[in-house]
Length: 48
Image (cartoon, rainbow, N blue to C red; front, side):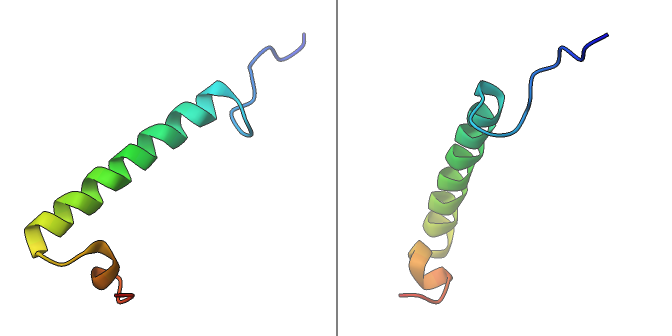
C-alpha cells in the first residue's frame, strides 16, 4: 500500500503556514522586547 501522506518539507502549504506563524511570532517578540528594554532590536544584538 502506498503512503498517501503529503510531504511536510519544501514549498508545501503545511511548511509555509508554519513559516508564516513563526515569522509573525518573531516580529511580535522582537517589538515587545524593544518596548520593554527601550533599546532597538539592532542594539540588543550589538549591531547598532
